Length: 200
Ligand code: ADP
Ligand code: NI
Image 1: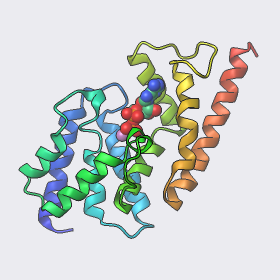
Image 2 (image 1 turned 180 degrees about the vertical axis):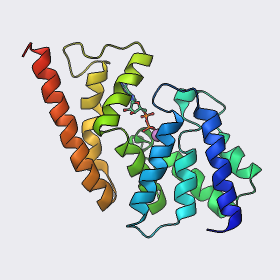
Image 3 (image 1 turned 30 degrees about the vertical axis):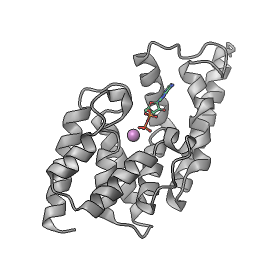
């Protein structure tokens, strides 16, 4: 990576930190740091453009609907930094197609760079941190932790509606391996939760 790219990355870090600092719905800046770190780990085993991966990881949630905002923060940031059009389009393409909802709505398959960031983001929704994020999100929305059903809007239902499905949606070999471990943790967690629910 050249000096200009390193400087844009440093600016993207401060930009994402400023946008996400006060969020408590699971989109805090620490989530972004974890996604970036995990994306870099996956990147070591893939042939992909590191600059696009890191920029996309840092910017991946700045336009998330849950944060409100104008919806074009990433685009404005990339234009303000005079990032080349090719890179800008690669990053914006990833941000538009990587989410679970975009994929469910039939968005195009992301590039290899997009697949890496998508895997890193999804890995952060499972395992011990994923459990914490689900209950933090549910708490923020005033939802019950569990209400006796796997099919309502409780936080525990979210495990069944989404989190348990993520393991099979991983793109890369590295993410599949890590997801297997985190998925087993989720299953163990749910088993213990239900045992306690039943008074055991
Ligand atoms: P990201 O785009 O960072 O993967 P989401 O916007 O889907 O994440 O959600 C952020 C966090 O909040 C994730 O950990 C996710 O599991 C959790 N979350 C999202 N929707 C719900 C929900 N309905 N109930 C509980 N947790 C949720
Ligand atoms: Ni995210």
